[in-house]
Length: 107
Image (cartoon, rainbow, N blue to C red; front, side, top):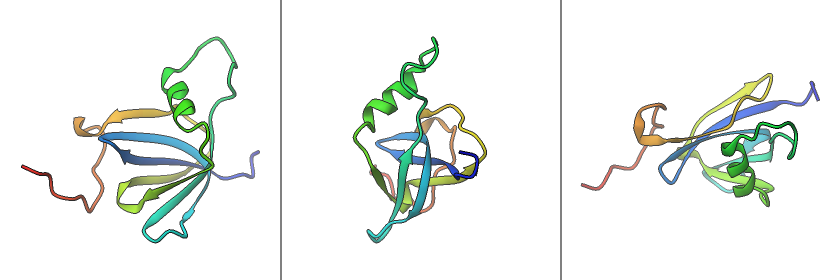
């Protein structure tokens, strides 16, 4: 397991900022998209503590083999040594840097 690369992928989706971990990140064959595959979750049923965010993400992406994320939605991709906690944050609360370029907001 140590020789497998692990990536932390931060992206925007429907006004939320998602942080997921994956083993595969590459430029997609679909022009303008980033390919994210082999999502990493803790084994189901391990331990007594249940992380509701991880359970929600596991349920949302349970049948997903590969995500094709628009490049402008990707905020950051980091190669990390170990998995941290997964997160879903409100993108408007200032906790994350907004990516460039962003379409103008309707007024």
